[in-house]
Length: 140
Image (tube, rainbow, N blue to C red; front, top):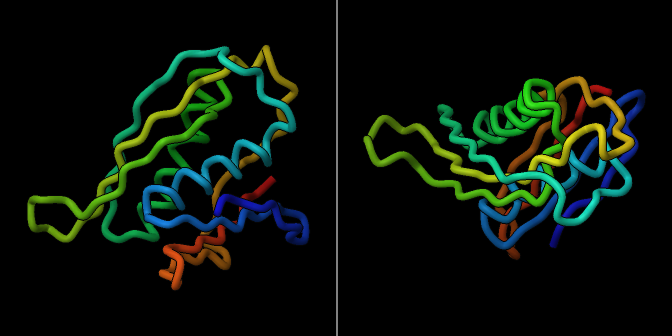
């Protein structure tokens, strides 16, 4: 379980697996971090929270990753050490919710590469015998 970076024409892809939706969301986010930076300093940076809602699980994964890229740009930090809790919203509207945290390492403390955006190109989020699998392509 975890993630692997995959070559994808001019872009980069992350293939991830986890025993739960929570684990696979966090693993894809860890893969996003790895696509942006080879080495992350331990312990540097403060944790921050994210709350994302979307109409289905795939849109939720897209919006979660998009929010991490937005936080990188706005806060000037590299989001690392991801934790995610994914659930169907209780209000009966069929939406999904991701409550997540990450540690924000200042970009000045790392040698980071630019990942421009998450894409829907070839995106997959599917159950497996072991839990969940995700495949996400990022525009670099």
